[in-house]
Length: 62
Image (cartoon, rainbow, N blue to C red):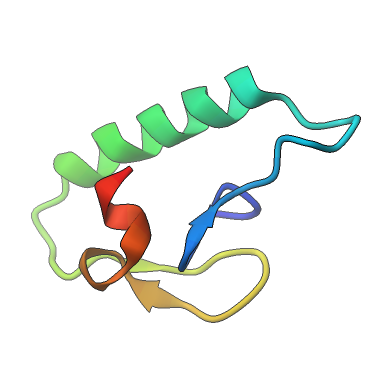
């Protein structure tokens, strides 16, 4: 997921080159793709930090 989704949160939007609307769009797109998956559990491999199982993460509620 690159810098969009992390184990305990989502990407930063406070940087000069970041875009809150782009992040929101990316999160909505990821949610749609994940909802259509038939394979479980969904493992996320972020650009930084450790991989995690989405359903066991606090970001699963976003």
